[in-house]
Length: 573
Image (tube, rainbow, N blue to C red; front, side, top):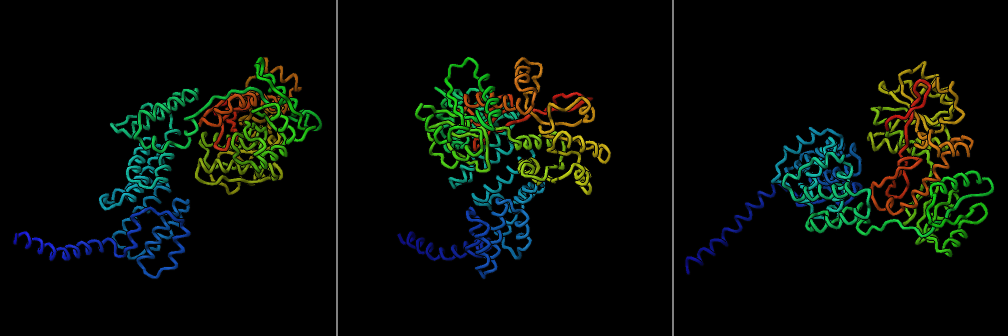
């Protein structure tokens, strides 16, 4: 008994000594208790941390706030500012230096310096990292893998990242990013990937394969996703199902009882409306779905919607005129419970449940041009736009797409006269090998003539505005090598449908495009749920390869043509 008591008294005398030793050890890593914040998630904005930095006097706390701000600046795509903050850091303790290395690796990855980032990460002792820091460690590895287009390695890093995340929203975000990686991957990469004995990786691969195998059959896809959830109940993607797939779990196939078609069929817009209606009716063919037609030139849009509701119409195609589209956008409650395929878009477009926007947008052509030039290996194009509202809109659309492809702004220039374009190449990058231009046929011929003299090796890409029925054989003889985008319907110039449309429109290309738009409007409204709910669902239409983005803007992937020896041929997109 005395020995036990003596042992207890000895432990009591020893504890203060052990505690002081432990605290000495901690103080080497965390001189300030606030520095421990570096081991946790940074949930505030960079502005918040910079404001705090100006409020504290303690030097160590100032360095900690700089590290927190730098970390968040990277996620805000403000890498140069993050680098500036790191350059200001002085007299860091061990914990701060460790976190600095994590931030430096993240910056390297953001700049595409993959080997540097991975070298910085490997210099770290994983045993000294908290779970939050480990999640950042693996996130940076995921970024370097993504930079190298190595989807599987990026997914594996994000799986390790999830193992160290505790915040629910961060786990959800990580699931969505992991799914986005897999969704963007080539099917060959997915099919050849091994799960390497990992249940987590195996679950992800099974999920993306179920998606890819059933993308053309949305009903079966919905069933396949339900089966996957049952097979992998403990998988992180079953707990936090990818947001993009949520609507598919309860997918219902499009089933139309009747359709309301809203077009201007009299007055100034009559030729537009009747041409679209002709394409719509021809695509409808022998379908038994009733179509009630409303003339928006004679009846206000709110009255048309009321009449459609009274007729129990649940699907509307139209309106076409922008002011009528804006009227619905400003009062979406009017069309609640109805599927609406607007045949135009306006600057006021916004996400409205059960409403999609489709039209022959020049912005679609600009995005297609950015994709085409990037695929053709052009990295520093000059984009020549007319000095007007159209040029501003199309130039902006090209630039948004180019930023996603190249991570930098495109060289957008605006011209008043075709001769202006020759000056755009003065002082331009030496590897400027391509020009994208929106112009009339005559303007394009003039531009081509100037560049043949001053910059003969520049590849010219143009929009459909330069493709007109009035272009002669003599015109095409001077346009050799020029590529331009237009609707795929023009590839079918030997078909009976093409000949019929050409005869009814007098061969006017703009009217033929409107006919094709009407035909595709029928196609789209009959696959409305699929487009809205199935990510990546694509239809082959007369106006392009059609799919919907997250706001249900219908995107058109254009067909590309090239003038070769005076003849127009299709080229690979």
